[in-house]
Image (tube, rainbow, N blue to C red; front, side, top):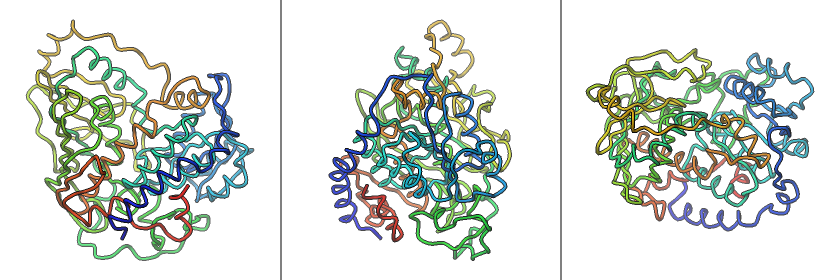
Length: 472
């Protein structure tokens, strides 16, 4: 286990190393230019099945990409065949390291849709190689990995980075900002965030005392590369094709999966930063290996820039609905939520979303790009004439990234912004895993009341051969 001293020393060394590194390579390969929509971005896709297929299709609809390379540890499997057939001229790889080594000169940007635990090494190598990076959320699985990626992005301001919380380029983003600027959203003291839909791991036995046993590897699967920096696990189908989301070693649970679609604008525009306290208030199904059936997590944020202290309470699980204020009305389901390989998101008693409590008003909202509404309805009617005009988005999330690659826009969810939210979620996951309360010092970025939890900020040491990604 990495100690507190190791973590601090590594943080200092990494900060110093990132200040130099591969600067010459970056300057040679990436000179910012003003090209706009007409100049296609040469792109490589890493993770091309399931969610990867969806974002590849989203990028294709922009008409702004030239697909140069495809990479997936499961090339040849049924779920990757469609994309391979669509881009027969693209170079194919099973190992992203080989792709950068053999085809790195052929592309300018990468889009990453792999399991959470592999976001860090791929993104870090891409930045060190001078590539623009689009990566699905969460940015990273551990606090330390998110810290390193934010540092790496800051040292490379000519590279565009974008985390895939797509609603951050839709109506919710522009409405929240406009309502704050107009003083409609102000003096927020509490937020309830909820994700109470069914999830795929709810049938696992919470009395589990060891990880699943090994099974025969599928013929085309490069399991060693799939594992990445995580300590070795024998292959089991319960880890693969989205099942990884439920395991602490690979995923971030419902919080990491949905939090960025629900709390992104709250976190950015209310300038929340990092919490001073994270407490597990309720948990059903606690065990050492996978996320609980349901949980309630309290995040406490201090006063900042004239705004009052704010508490976020996160509820997940079918049996763990949050309290609903009077006049709430119907819980809407955002039609833009993408389907998954477990089927479309079905309506539940309370669909994913948030309730925002301010001094004078209460707002309700959904996930992704869903807009806020004032409740109860009578209050909404009273406020209607005072609401500002909300500007339309000039570009969706994929267009925004590509335009940023060409120097025409700035990304709306860059690593420097989304990375802090990713760190908030990593602290929440630690509270879930340890079933405890954590006190956090945002100045030193240390947990002050739990030495074991403090060591977990860095995560387990990477496997042999994967430590290089923590030194780039």
